[in-house]
Amino acid sequence: MPFSKLHRPDSFLDGRDAVVGIDIGSSSVKVVELSYRGGNYWLESMGEAMLPSDAIIRKSISRGDIVSGVISSLVSRLGVRTKKAVIGVSGEAVALKVVNVPRMFLGKDMEKLVPDLVRTSLRRDVSGVNYSYTPLFRRNGKSEETQVLIAAVSKKTAQEYKSSLFSTGLRARVIDIDAMALSNVYTVFCRGRGQKVALVNVGASGTNLNVLDGTAPFVLRDIPLGGQWITLHLMEKFKITYEEAERIKFSIKGYARYDEIESVFADFVARATDEVKTVLDEAGEVIDRIILSGGSSRIATLADALGGVIGAPVEISNPFQNINVSDSRFDPEYIEHLAPKMAIAAGLALRGL
Ligand SMILES: Nc1ncnc2c1ncn2[C@@H]1O[C@H](COP(=O)(O)OP(=O)(O)OP(=O)(O)O)[C@@H](O)[C@H]1O
Ligand SMILES: [Mg+2]
Image 1 (spheres, rainbow, N blue to C red):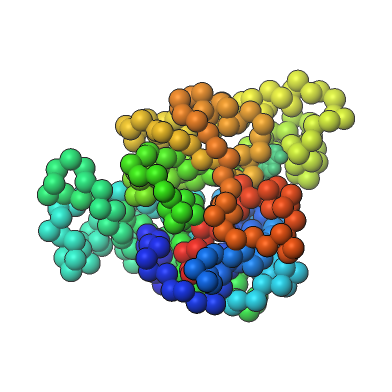
Image 2 (spheres, rainbow, N blue to C red):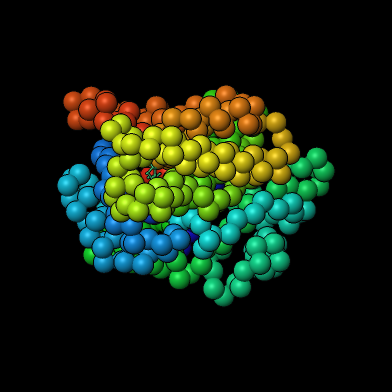
């Protein structure tokens, strides 16, 4: 099964086909169905359904029956018509690296070289993973070398995610990598050339990072820190349930011990910005813009803190900005509310079109 190939707008077919991107996150399943007709992308359906806290642990599906049931009822509630799905994976099961390769290897020799790169650069056993590569056509200063993205996903995890669709009637055409899906929306519609843009998706259990030079990713990383860190600390501090802690995160109005809650948020923001800065420092390039997405992008202080630490303006992602959305079918307020969470699901759908 192919995955992680760079999405190229010129490879699209103008047709009536729709594809549904299914982002199976630790806290919820997000679904975006897109079609391409009349030379435009259209939003066909979109929605989210929450998962119990033990359904996905460290990005591994531990309760497949529950995840399948949630996806089934979500796609039927939304009236998703297509059977063609693209799902994404991230976290420990995924290994990604951008490596320099002599240009003369691009082509047939690359097929022979990739298993070695998986072993040496990604440190994965070739028999246990699905792997792929994508030339990035980004030079590293030496004209005889070019950069290639190597990606590997554990076969066990890929199978777990695919299996979660079995009973839903959907077929996973492609398994993509969340960090790559994150850039699809940006690269398909990107007009500005040559900017260094950091796409930062802060979810529940993790943060996906994709740093682009123009439209070519050159740093891809999953950081195992997301908004669940706050949930777990609130649970421990106040001896409350997961659900209660999540409620406090959405609105702390009416809760006592306001200062203590604020300090848990502040700790998280400091940690998250620190982790992102470490990765961006390794990239060694000045970042022109940050585009922030994921449910935890809603944490009021995160965008400003990230902008301050990195020294770049931060925008909150709206993956539907360049996609036609019918006002009669979708409530604009609902779209606006969910949009930052939908960056990966929209990227997955675009990947399949
Ligand atoms: N208004 C809000 N304020 C604070 N946190 C929020 C808010 N809305 C959502 N979150 C947090 O965002 C997280 C969910 O984000 P998202 O849906 O992007 O994660 P996920 O895709 O389920 O997880 P992951 O990708 O890490 O597996 C949860 O931790 C949730 O508490
Ligand atoms: Mg997510």
